[in-house]
Length: 142
Image 1 (tube, rainbow, N blue to C red):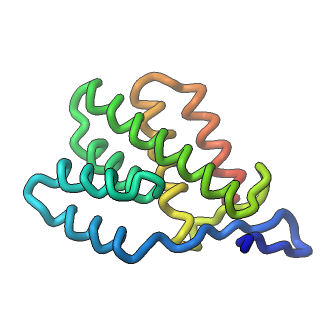
Image 2 (cartoon, rainbow, N blue to C red):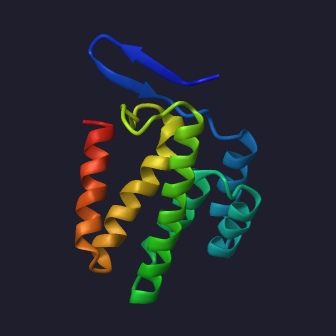
């Protein structure tokens, strides 16, 4: 079933399905572990198709990014989450246009990945990509 809602006011709104409850529980538990990075990475291995898992790992690495290697690592995690999110959007009726709003909690894994990609692209000097990501975020939720 498609999660595309059409309205007379403009483009369709896309709402991704809710992430599995066991993913949310696993991420909550992992973020409370002393070896947080390893624990979240294990969750990503269990749920590699979920943008939320990649966004969480990217944000964790970003929060500790003191050197270029960490920034590139966070960039890579966000990029994977972004692409997994695009896959999910397409599977749910997105045709390359329409709104994907922050107000729908199920969309936030994709949007956090895209916003993280924007931040890390800027941090590693990929300024044009950062601008494209910012523009895309604005298009998705003006």
